[in-house]
Image 1 (tube, rainbow, N blue to C red):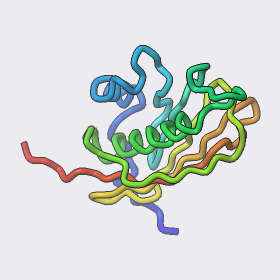
Image 2 (image 1 turned 45 degrees about the horizontal axis):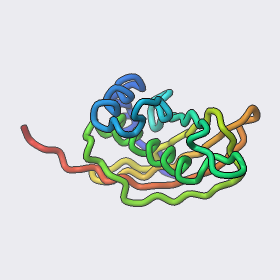
Image 3 (image 1 turned 60 degrees about the vertical axis):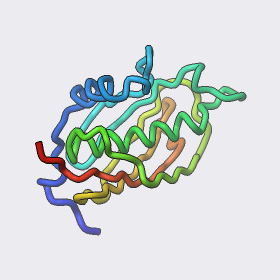
Length: 152
């Protein structure tokens, strides 16, 4: 497997800068809550967290699929913003998810890694873990489109 060059994997933003940026350009993500946040940004990836509460549960006290799907998508968005630059117009072009086991209310961490970062696309995967034993509850792969650089 080919590895990325350090230049392409060096983050351009910290977790704190990402959280502030998301609050500015995507305020509806969390509304009055702080359910989805970036906890770490590192070369070639990031960690995002869903603080899953009652509003994320479906019958059976299981965190809903759409909530986990959002965590996977936010993980990709954070990766592309932190590594390709803070362009709010980066968009998901593909996202596939596999649900492994039940996730209950509480913190769910999305461990994201960039598989390929090009000029116009970024491919990533995210492993979501939860519970006291950090069991894998879901795994996703996705692609983000990176808009061309604008002059001015």
